Image 1 (cartoon, helix red, strand yellow):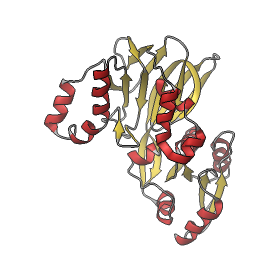
Image 2 (cartoon, one colour):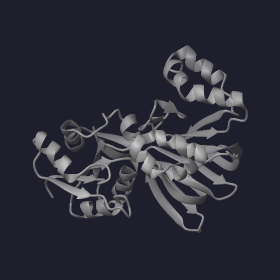
Image 3 (cartoon, rainbow, N blue to C red):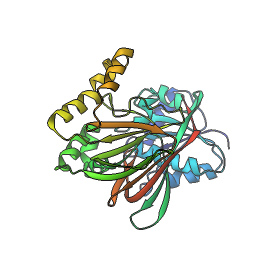
Length: 313
């Protein structure tokens, strides 16, 4: 099928506004599809792909992007995507340095940009109900505290203040409790970690220039891992410095990076990377993928499809 396809989240923008910018961009034969509320765009994407579209621009946030990419990953034919980043977190767009916001230029770039291949994260999860489910993601997965914060963040507040609403979700998750996780990375020995939260990422940077995994790259064939477990107030001070200003100012300098690595405290945060990461919480733990809470899991096996997703930039 010829022409362009855009799947948009109607809670983020309207058909009329998209049509206005499409006209400004002088684009022809653009078909607009509303993301379905039940699956956040997954079923819509299946329909669009079945109609023959092999490139889909997504106008929405991380949740809509992840849902559409789930359908793209399951497709029998290769389907590329473009990003019109108008969500709360926009993690993938930020890590690809795609300008945020809706405009004629962002639509044109999402539909006609140059193809670029990135790795696609895969999570094979044994759910609390005993079912084995396969999920795909592009940014960051989290178990424990990270997922609980997502669970307890109010959607109405997210619509009003954006990603800052996650701070409210953090306060609503207090008091924090340590959890035990069995973790194995590639062929390394199994370890038991006592942490608040476990993160597995293909992309490292979050809104506010925060990163728990500053070395993560979208196309290096590796997943990055962070175990977050500050014990004392000074561990928390160290943690906040490391994930904010030190990443931006100290780490880019060769000597600064050596200093950060030499002074890393595993009671603050531990970073690893590998092609395969298996995590088993000691009790059922919630899991989030790209900001969407998928339910409680008993075990998750993370891996990558190297260069498995084409994004137009």
